[in-house]
Image (cartoon, rainbow, N blue to C red):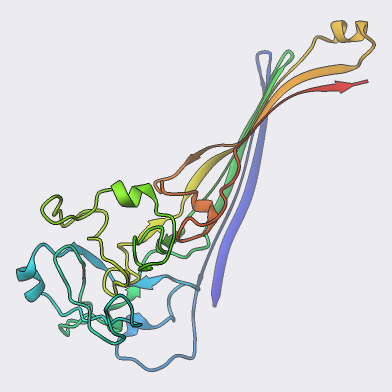
Length: 290
């Protein structure tokens, strides 16, 4: 494995008028590539790990949703099989493609969609870029400290019963409201081949729930990690009550998150949202130095 990267930090201090101002930041970037690996022989070089990143995501390339049966008949065969007997379907039985199901790209051109059509897609679940930056300012008795953190160059798949509704059959589980009320393909209601979610099915769906860029999401985010605002009472006033310093402050953590992914916090590192989210906290207090 060949690994490369860089990191750095900076700090800048300046007095602007009566304001003491500080900017600071840090960044770490890394990437890797598999140079050599003992793998099985294949005529499809794109299936090899060699030349790709460690833990590189792989899957099908989605071409949207099937519009009608004519399109299904004129497209490469997608004959995925059920993996277990459930809800009237037998293990090994071929799933019947219908309008509203996901259509995949035939990479090798053999007219069949199978494991030989899976390619490297997206990035890795672990971010290649991690960074942070902040600012501090002080004017008379007022002080402000702000810190942001973020990450980039990462992708992840969304799946599970919270996302793929009724995929567990009779199993219990919560469902995200975005899945129930979102832009989903529905016969006679919304037959958009570019809908965000495919048609609903009950139980297993060997076709729609394959790993593909249809379910791949960007894990990048930027978060306002901490905000600290304080005011120190004038020294002359504090000394009259025989104290050195009195500071009133507000501190907030995890106040804002900016990300294209909206279903749950991308920092959680899960595919189904089933993890306790980071807490947003607010604190008010008084600091007294005797």
